[in-house]
Image (cartoon, helix red, strand yellow):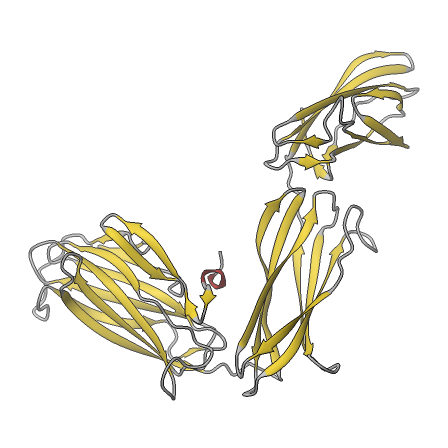
Length: 416
């Protein structure tokens, strides 16, 4: 999952993920996209709600006071940071006692600007809680990260780390760090497309669904009313629509941009198992709500790789004589989805001609053969893990070699 996929906005706030830790419930703001904990100096992944244990360290130095002391809280990487980037922050804390300490780190973050309240285009940030275990006089290093949305007009990100006891909630230490945010200077024209990208791919009955997301930015200080038109087409080795693929009608939606604000939209494209395309190309065009002014155009490409091994086919020559033969074929749907109106296709390598068949409707054009379920001898829907067997009688003159490649609803099968 990319970083953008971790940010879910609802009613102007960043949603909260909840994790059950070994010592209770911890919450992680969705905007906090990465968390690490270092134990004895070696960085290891740690999700919010897990426990980071520190090894016994050297005696705490003379500056270590109280129960737990924060040695440092600082943003890492580039500072100041541009809007649209990711800000990493690291905390280093020390147990000042000779007893192990169970604590929690609560991260509070807020965007600030020239006025009061949350700056335009910026989200409210829910607190993130991490559980940490300190060894006697031990040290814990942990951190998280915050995405600065491209449309956020804040000039500063302020993050406070509070370390408190798991039981009782006594505050051991607290420290705040500030990060200067530089406004994005790359927004050009009236409206700019920040990204157009395919994200998740979901298996559905009869094929897959490819989701695509658009993020666009209003580069002006005035609200803009626009229209987004999505145009999709399947691409294959030749001209025109590839065999088995559907023509895709363009569709448009209204897009209302607040001043200096963002517009996001996601949709999906169905790719049938019968579609022989090698790619799906989608273009997003943003234009004025009235008139013909085009603000921005961007295209995204999705590579279609038919799943191999979604079926298994076996060809068995039951008998053969001079000029004739009898053969059967068994096909198994090895995918997790049912195959409706299934069709098995193959090509004879020799000069065979089928003269009659049973348990399937078989057609032949030249050397190419296709067979589909009859609904009686073989089902028309081949369920996940289900098999069907059919047979035929044919003639040959020069070559009765067995076929070696099969496809089920356009998807290559394994053989054997």
